[in-house]
Image 1 (cartoon, rainbow, N blue to C red):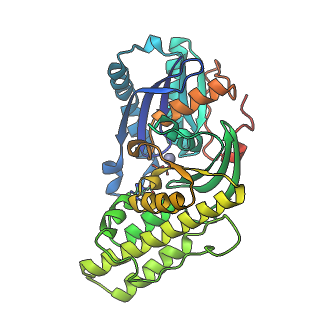
Image 2 (cartoon, rainbow, N blue to C red):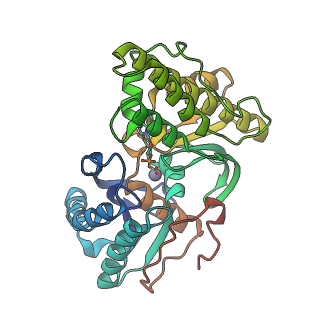
Image 3 (tube, helix red, strand yellow):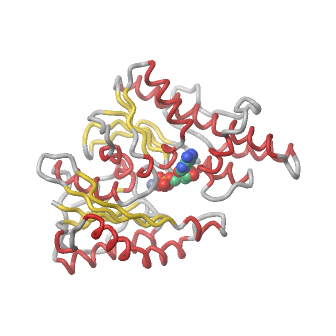
Length: 348
Ligand code: KG4
Ligand code: ZN
């Protein structure tokens, strides 16, 4: 079975082809990605209308690139998958429209996929795939969640952010530090030159008996420090503040992940979503988990941020597990707000 997957929920257009043979782990044959970062940079964030228009321009050229890379033709595709939500409504509509139109023309069924499920399952494409059950730390620009994962479609929310997501905390702090968009990778680079102990920044809910997160106070603290430093801050205090910000976010993510492992009694952790590319987070999680005999799994670094491979993979795993049926109605169907806990609600 060959699955063509489209991701268009935000500012990356991703297309991928995954092969899922009976009883075998799905394999990524080819994927292609276009990031809109350069286009949105001038505005300091994603402009939804520009995002939608660019997805339209990129979807088919990327599809051709993927098929050529895999040495396959459109007619070889058995199922077309797309990101059904959550995300920007217009951007999602482009991906679903392209997927449904292609599937209708090919007389193939379509399957809408939850973006976070894509992130959650993405480590199954890595050289060291996890086994169920595991605790998943999902850390992206829009979400920060700890889940218990017992199988495909079998997800229990353990805790989540009550305000900003971890990626948002990185991005907003980076903006205050005068770094570009998206700020996470830029802040991480600057942090390498800084002293993480130079500033004491808050770690809300860290010692509370909850697996929820709160990051909104962090950007306020960063803003206060920047105001104290005044205009024309030189490089070292900025690097120190970046390092202290990263340390605060990473410490909370590591401690809450360990608490979730303790609470569930599980010995396996999966980290997914854009912030999962952060090197400091990876090294601290690796060290803390190694001490406790916990195995940690990550997606390949190139598949941490949004991509089409995770969407085609999630479709493959859902179909293999009998947790979804691809549809032939080719109805444009998106769900911009879609909690992962409500994954199967309303899905035929
Ligand atoms: O998963 P993703 O690509 O998109 C969403 O679904 O939101 O995550 C994007 C987020 C952004 O907030 C970005 O700043 C953050 O991931 N990010 C990072 C790093 N790479 C991406 N944050 C910290 N360190 C990084 N290396
Ligand atoms: Zn994402």
